[in-house]
Every structure is written in structure tokens, then in C-alpha cells.
Length: 191
Image 1 (cartoon, rainbow, N blue to C red):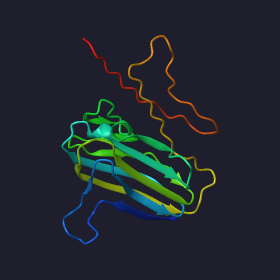
Image 2: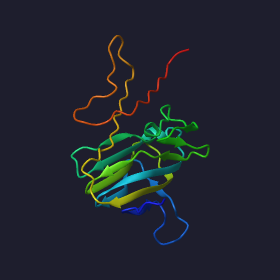
Image 3: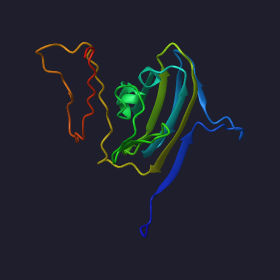
């Protein structure tokens, strides 16, 4: 706290821009909504969302995508639930330093996610039911570009059924960076 900070703290959210009490976004089947479209250099510091949906599978049916600096493919492309370590598609209270899920279906992510000139976050409803209320608050900082900053990436893979006797690829990547972890969910179809 005693050191001068050289950034501007910002937030994007689902808050109603008119000031009325409509602080959620509906997401129709097949619809993609842009959650954040930030121009400039900075870093996301906290993502929070909570969802009210009829479908019991909405954590699997909502696809989260994050693209840094106008890349041709998203750095993050996975179901919302899996991004927040909710692999079975059900809310489970979970706490770690970078990700936590509260008892009231509060999905939190604290991974630093830097970008040099542009960041776009979207969610797509890939299910058959509308999502009635998608709430979110994303905190970020606008700051001078940091040439040493590494981009945040997530790889998602789903094997159903898993091939027998064949190794499953957890991570496949090229370039410099830090591998920080894996979330694996295994479901069985029999007792």
C-alpha cells in the first residue's frame, strides 16, 4: 500500500447502464454475448460471475472464450463450469488461491490475465434453454505494456468415452511459459 501504483483500476459488469435494477444479461440458445471488450494494455485481476438458468447443465452448456491482442484463436475456450473447476457441471464449494466457488454459486477467478493492446471475453449459450440471468463483474487494470508478461491460456479436452489403452493428452503447447496446473474430472457410467 505504501508504493505508488502506475495503473488505472477498472471494471466491466452486467450492471444496467441506465441505473435501473436490471443487473443481469439473458443469453438465448445459440447467442454469444460480449462480456468485455477492452482496448489498451492491462491485465484482468478478478473475474466473478453467477448464473440463474433453468437447465441443470448450464455450467457445461455455456462456452467461455477469451482472446488476447486480436489472436486468430481464443487463449481460453471451455465450458464455464470447467474453467472454475466445476467439472461435473454441478456447483461444488471449492477454494484455492487462483479459483474459488462460494456456497451461493459465486464463481471467482484470480489468475492474472495480461494483454498488450486488446482483450475480448465472450460467453455462448450452446444449450437448448435460455439463460435467464448471467451476472458478472470483471476487474482489470490499465497500465503500461509489460513485454515480460505471459498470456494466460486454458486448454479443455473432453473424452467420452475415454479410449482404452491410449494415453490422454493433458497439455500440448509450444513456446516459453509456466505450466500451473490441471483439473481432471472423471465420471463413470456404471457402478
